[in-house]
Image: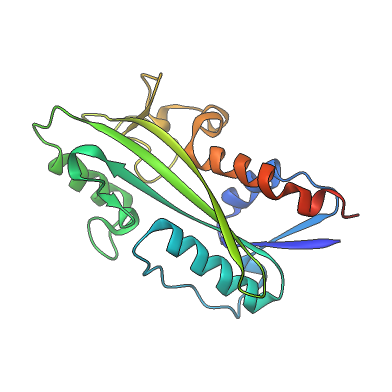
Length: 199
C-alpha cells in the first residue's frame, strides 16, 4: 500500500483529488494528518517554485511522496498580474471580496479583459526530487461578480466558450473545464503508473 500526502487542509480539495486518483493501492492523506508539520511560507517568485517548495517540505517531513499545488490568475491587460500573488493581491490578509474589488478597479475602462487561470501541481519524493505538471483555463474577467459557488476569483472569471462565471457553474461543470481539474487529470495521467500496480 502506497501513501500519497496532499498538501492541503481543505477537505473539498482532498475530495476532488480522491475522485481523480482512484488507484486501489493508494492511500491519500492530507496535511491535516500531520499537524506537527508547519505551514509552508509561499514566498517563491513563481507558481512552480511555491508548489515544489510545499511538496518537498511535506514529503521530507512525512517520509512519503507529496503532492502540492499553487494557482494564479493571470490577466493580460495587467501584464500577468496578480499571478503568483493572486491570494494576497489586495494585501497579506485580504479576503476574496477585497481581491475581487481590487481587480475590478484595476480593469476599470479596460476593453481587454482576457485572462487565464493557471494551476501548477508538483509531486515530490522524500529525497527532495520533484517534478510538476500544469493546467490552464483561458477566459475573460466579468464587469461585476456573479454567482455564489466556488471561491476566490470565481465570481469574476468567465471560462472560454461560456457566458457564466465559474461561480455560476455547478461543481461538476467547473471541474470539467477548470485549471485545477486539468492539472489534476494531467497529474493522474503522468504519475498514475507509480501507484496503479500497488495493492
